[in-house]
Image (cartoon, rainbow over all chains, first blue to last red; front, side, top):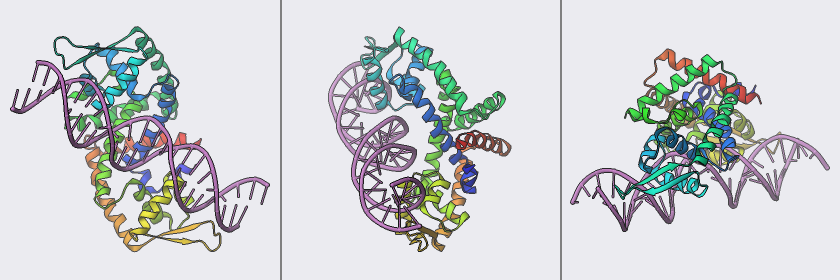
Length: 148
Length: 148
DNA sequence: CTCATCTCAGTCAGACTGACATTC
DNA sequence: CGAATGTCAGTCGGACTGAGATGA
């Protein structure tokens, strides 16, 4: 297999392995989302709205770890497709309150199922236990950075 | 910590965790390389040249998993800095034979040390044993895709 | 002719920066 | 006033596509 032909330095460099697998992950996830005219950012926004309820764009940006400027555009898209509603908050008129619509909620659940099978494909070489180990390791490594 | 505020769907999605940590990895590695006027692609090329000796751009492209068109430009850069030499192969005049120079070799070893400490920073939350586990899991997951 | 190699121009999604008006 | 919010324009590195020239 040609993967074994990669230089030792790269094959043992965590950041390279991470990068290569992230490319693959982005590809499989992207194909699923593209089938519904969406991108990764849209999914993160819908997920946050479903789990935390209506919230401001700033809250969405923080929770889904997306840039605020990008959130403006993602929400533009979602609003145009009637997957979310954007309303000025009367209590604080700087804020928009974003709410997921029933169509958005339905689409989210459909995406969940498709993305789950995408993950199966991505991690096909790993047992269920190994996948959980991988998730745990990544989570711990990430948490240290978000603390800063 | 605000990482805990991320939607459950994202926090448990391997591709999202992978993507987030890959961003961090790219940042720390990129800073090291930028200090020497290089990018990630340059490092992969130097590593391959050091480990496998002089080789064609096509071989470099395959081994370091870089796009062939991009390799043209990375090599342009390295050649301009006298870190590699590019010679037409007389036996097959379609090919360039790329050779690492002594300056390139010296720089590579300096980068190795700096990148290693960058990885320490990236994975500071993980023990040595956990880092090896992570590398093993990523390697196995990746190998399945490169087989295709 | 077919195929591989190299080169070049350009596209694309996505992370990011800086400026700005509005509102608290 | 300073700080937060949303908006907008634009930059940047990097993955990728397609076409073409050269030569095996």
